[in-house]
Length: 288
Image 1 (cartoon, one colour):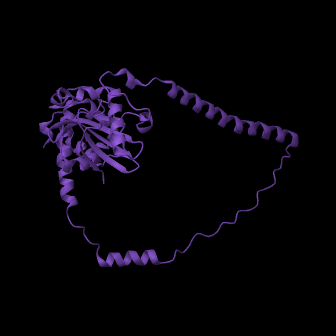
Image 2 (image 1 turned 120 degrees about the vertical axis):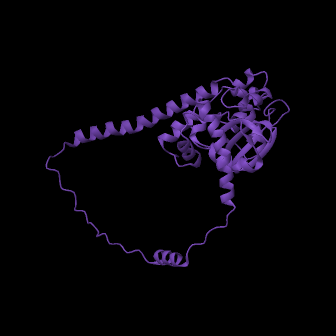
């Protein structure tokens, strides 16, 4: 895989992004935006991620390299030595008496004003929070507007807070062996915009035709995430990413999420969240 194969794609930069070298930098956000918006970057990403995941799996199978005995002994001795403070104690002098005499009544009036500000500020913040919460509770459930999706249970809102911040349409054909390591890469740059086009990556049109188009609707996606949370059985989940792709040749929505039982990558079929479909689980692995 070379840069000549993908016009306009910086392969070295993309490899750094997939490998995690750009985490926490503005470059990571820029690359994530390019992946979400540019078909050439999406195609290169879809090809590069499985290869790096396979290499990572091979490296993970190598036996650990023992630390040299001399280095281990030196570290043990350094940690065992008592800490010696070399910083002299600076005894601060008593504060000087102000030369200007402050009127006691004026000082009390100022303190009263400051005290009122300290009390009023938290009250204002609390009132704003209550107003925001009331707005959120008063919004109608968008899931009822989708005729193709199963009605979410009453406790669905408590299981899934929002749709994933990172949504890809890579068309990658995942396997059970690569699902977990690919989950490491799908965590990158969670601020990337959502992608809704079915032409984002070569081969994705096939998965759309097989039923994943229904899961493009935000209400259907939330129903699917709720079904996954219910089957996971560990309380609410926080969905970090979703990839409209395949799993062992079958159209699948690959979701990376965290819950009380850890972080998982979950592959669900096209019936995920539909009436009687449950999570339509095809495969799932914990992220190590």
